[in-house]
Image 1 (tube, rainbow, N blue to C red):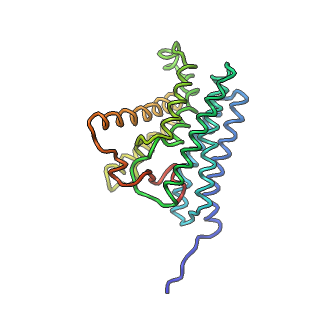
Image 2: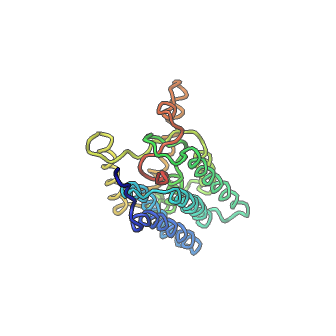
Length: 266
């Protein structure tokens, strides 16, 4: 009879360490935004997203996933991609009215409900679906968190500076909130592999994002985030207009859980 191998304690703590790193950056993003350092706050959310993207991969690679890690990941995501980005926008743009904090509440409430729904529907099982049900919280949080970056670019000042951004951001927060708890399918990041075209594209997208992170982060991430959000809405409308089946129902599972963010390390 083969003896079952268990991961070493150090391997168990490694993915949890990255999850707590995500929490560290989320908390420091709030602190930085409250001090008026919105550029640093944006970097904290981006770095937190990096930690969130690899903790699940490390857990699977080391066979150290656990229910504790899954719950810890959800709680941390609620702070790093729910509370922190909402407070960043509030401190940067929406603190001029005494009622704007309600947008923060509504966004965070939807982020928390999305993560709770995710855990219930996943039920601790990894799936191979290529789609998320609703907008992933890291995508929503990253879009909000990088708005201030974009607002400091020449492109913004040349083309968008005259827009009513206080109103636009309120509607953006509401839209992201509803999309997180919606059933709109959102394409997940492809699995990394040189064996398939999709996997190769995933690798190219990853390296392109890393290059953009160092070359032009301020002008890159917010437009890409908004494009991802809009693409999901457009594709859902086209499926409804042409009576096409949802990719979620076609794959036979209510949630999309590839090996990256929001997989909660099953």
